[in-house]
Image 1 (cartoon, helix red, strand yellow):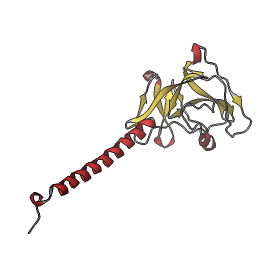
Image 2: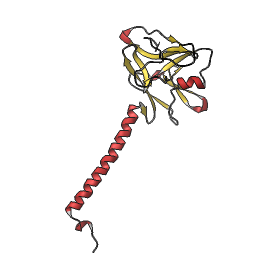
Image 3: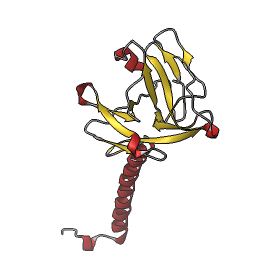
Length: 187
């Protein structure tokens, strides 16, 4: 005799429902986790999000998962070694859109084309960079001068309504050091 759904016991049918619900729960949890990770990283499916973050020492600064900086270059170009300390804020491959998040002027966000066709994010026409020693949102360890020039955090609204003036820590070698100082480039 062939067993059909009509012949199954109510208990067996109940177990199938529990297994199906459990499977759906695992699937939905996985999807929610990936959506949360994407949102937490500051990335959107269409591109990269630049937003502001309020800090005690600087006021509102630009960030995209970490603090971003601009460079006032020296006579030594920022090439491979420099970029190992100061990675460019690049759009994900295939993306052409920067999203202006909370506190960011859409009119000031843009991109420039880099080697290999990648797009680097700009703010107020200035290319943006991350600093490798900033490992969490709000850290500002790269407000400094080094071999490649003067690196400044992008201050959108200075702390306590003050005027933003660059303050840097100088280094005499090409290695990056933890800088500090309550200043930055104001926009």
